[in-house]
Each structure stands twice: as C-alpha cells, then as structure tokens.
Length: 155
Image (cartoon, rainbow, N blue to C red):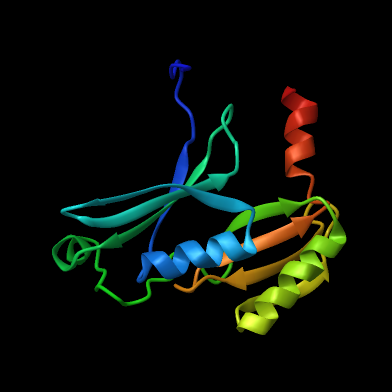
C-alpha cells in the first residue's frame, strides 16, 4: 500500500438529510460508486468516488448527522442544507456531448435538472447542471478539458 508522502487534496464533504437517498442519487446520475459506509455516535457517512480511482483518489463524503452533532453546524436532522448552490458546484467531465444530454434527460425526468444543456465559452464547454436531493449543484460538462489540460501540463 502506498504511503502518503506529501499533502494532497482528498475530498469534499456535504451534509445530507437522507444518506441512502443521496447515495442512490449519485450512483444513478454520476460515475461515482460507493466506496465505504460508516456509522458511529455522530451519525452515518459514505464515501463515493470514481470506480477504481486509486492513484489520485478523490472522494465525495456524504454525512448525515445525529441531532446533537448537526446542531453544532446549524443542521437539523432530515432538513435539506444546500451547501453548493446556486452556482457553487461539483464538476464532472464527460467524454461525449451526448453524455451531457443523457444526464440532462434523466435529471429532467426526475425533476432535478437545474440548468438546461448549453454551450458556454471555450474553457467551460457544453454543460448542464442537476440538483441533488439536498439542493446541491452538480455540473456535467463536455469539452471543458480540465482532465486533458492537467494531463498536458503535468503529465
């Protein structure tokens, strides 16, 4: 097992009102899969990531707190707390333009489409956004070139 030898960005954490509903949502609409689920005296949590992402692991942590712990953060159990909204978002880059349209269609059927698919400036690409069960924004893009730019500059 590789050892951590330098600081690295590892996760983004979001509070959720219903952990199981959120896991189902993210596994249905994004490329993320459940890595692990935990429960302790503070509540329940789950880690989601791209399947097999080992060398540059990055995790979305979903946390459902018990009342006493949630109160420390101004969160009431079962209440939605949109942390990433209306523009703040998690970005997911897709390989094909049609993939953006496909996500938008699924989200539209679910009543979760936030931004219709649209072409933006060259550095943004073709995008749409969906709202997760707690009101957070997830952007799906094609041709944004985040992945390829990092590969080109640092690969």
